[in-house]
Image 1 (cartoon, helix red, strand yellow):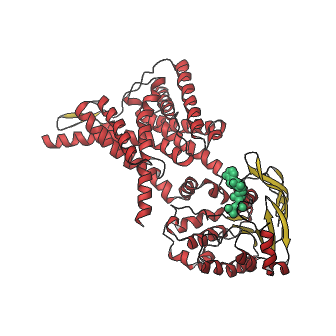
Image 2 (image 1 turned 180 degrees about the horizontal axis):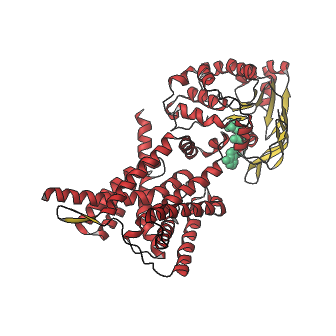
Image 3 (image 1 turned 30 degrees about the vertical axis):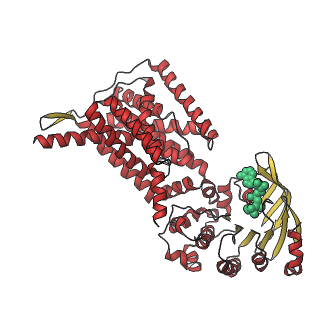
Length: 233
Length: 294
Ligand SMILES: Nc1ncnc2c1ncn2[C@@H]1O[C@H](COP(=O)(O)OP(=O)(O)OP(=O)(O)O)[C@@H](O)[C@H]1O
Ligand SMILES: [Mg+2]
């Protein structure tokens, strides 16, 4: 679904992500774990295209998208839920969702407003409210919903548990798994929250200093002692 | 009857002031709100609009058609400039100021070489009307009506169309808008074109009210600039409206009492006081107050 080959990117001329290769398989939830500042967000922004690739290549749906603009990648099927949620504060909930309508527009598939409102009834109740007035958890729902309305092929989430109360984080696990099953979605998540990551992941990688340093198999994922050791590299 | 005349005279003066501030500033505010760029060539864009309208009218086009033609030409000119020059300076306030200032110099000097030091203007359309024994220019009343009409159109475009929604989204967070599949680069070019066309529109409309000279752009820019700075870039349409009404009242009152020069000075003084109290401008203030109220 998504193949990163020897990817290098960063800010100005300083590389943050270095020589990173990774294969994201379709209809799986892939989690990348990494501590603060290892370059997780930089990697996500490079994948969606708001940061240019310095070296290497990005292949999405068997198409080389390395040189594509972010908007073109979004229209081709990438849905993005940014760190800090990136809600448009002065647009209403309804308008925030409408902003996602171009995602995967190339495929000409139907837009999933009704589905989003039925998954997140709280958004339905707050349709006319300004995005900036929602709580952290509600904003997270809105950010996920906004990326979903276009029925993307790949959903990318950057630390979705950050700043969200634990009960809502717990609710997100079955919702994301259900979406993967039902819509045939491929999901890529970067996280620092170990328990959340473990309950979500089909496949799990560890990132450190701008590159992937380990892949964890199923047994290692449940052995959280070893995971913690990886994260303390 | 005497009282009615007084009231009508005051309304005429205030409307005239407000209409000019709004019409001359609205394009500048849209560009500032969208791209964070203060277009110092805005006055020259107005001047280009005025010249185009005058020359087109002299060439035989009816004046209203000339105004539309001038707006389109200046809008197109703005889109080309955006593609060639302006887009290189997004996100860099200082460089963008220098770049647009450079453009303003090139336009005004270029026009000086091409067209000479001044241009004979055209007669003000519509003639005069007499109210309570005093004569007023009907055209200036029409300008006020046009300003109100434009305000309504802009409000509709920004708040009731999908294009407007996407534009507001891109103003609030361009990176996320881009990640949602919105081609912000094209949107910027288009918005810069609209802002330029509005400058051309304002310049063309006011062409019959003044003597035209290539170096006149600066005097067009000054009041527009003050309005924009006081308004701020947060909430463009409401900001432009409230600011031009407020500054129009201040300018109108002081020029009625002490003449136009003092009126301009009062405008500047008021701007400084307002910015001292509300550093993010009137629209910025409304924005934060609105959010706190909830
Ligand atoms: N806009 C920027 N300009 C320059 N350097 C940046 C920028 N954003 C991040 N960095 C640097 O890049 C490095 C990686 O940052 P990044 O945000 O990708 O880390 P992260 O893994 O997402 O961290 P966190 O867990 O805090 O979200 C950091 O050293 C940071 O200082
Ligand atoms: Mg991050």
